[in-house]
Length: 79
Image 1: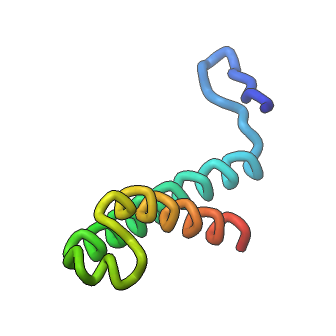
Image 2: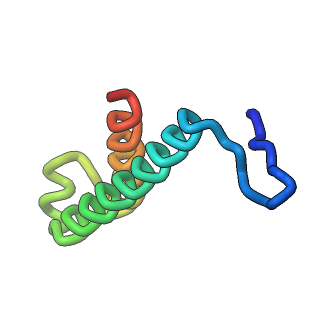
């Protein structure tokens, strides 16, 4: 991974294209967090019976929420 050069005044001389990549990754992070939180909240409101009908248990809620967030971030970054 390339590091940005720093001028004598302490300002970063990161190329604009690399800064755009950083901003896209930051945006992807926030998209992932939003999807993860919403997925967790929705599944957490679901009864144990409804989860069982979907083939899930209460222990699956956290990992599934994390996976949904990761997939959302990957989809955003690939677009």
